[in-house]
Amino acid sequence: MKTPGSIAVTDNDIVQKIYVVRGSKVMLDKDLAEMYGVPTSRLNEAVKRNILRFPEDFMFQLTENEFKNLISQNAISSWGGTRKMPRAFTEHGVAMLSSVLRSEQAIQVNIRIVRVYTRMRQLILDNKDLWMKMEKIEQALAKKDEEVQAIFKVLKNLLVGEEKPRQPIGFKIPGNK
Image (cartoon, rainbow, N blue to C red):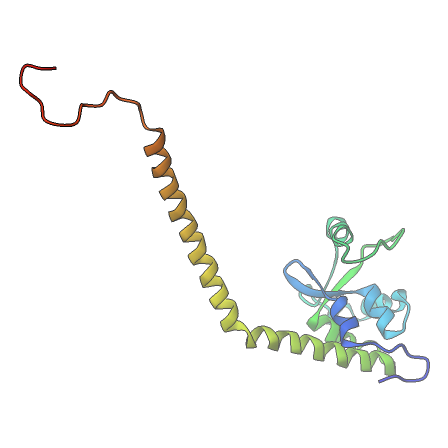
């Protein structure tokens, strides 16, 4: 994969740069540009020239709050004084980038990114049964927790119950108190 002047990008490098924003797995323009070996401005210019290829479900611009949230979670380092909020590319947006960036490195990295996304999706599908079983166990524990709490509530009421004078135990002789 390594060509003269290129940067070797591993699967782990790619996975480290995938974030979840708005419920989608995305990669940020700066990270993609770095992997492709181009300036972020060049990547964004190519996107602007081909904006019709990038609908909202392929690419969107982060809000200031989303960006601050990623930084605060140590997902990304502070980028210093950014003029514009970064763009986030979904899996489909990353695939579409291959049609607007045509360098050898961009093509090779793009192929690798698509393969990583595919493996991630397959991993989720392969472990679907495990996820479902874990969810059932979690729900069962939640129900048990409610039942245990109800038992403790009854026990506490029994222990803290009102102090009423008790009737003497045993046989009562009529006329005696």
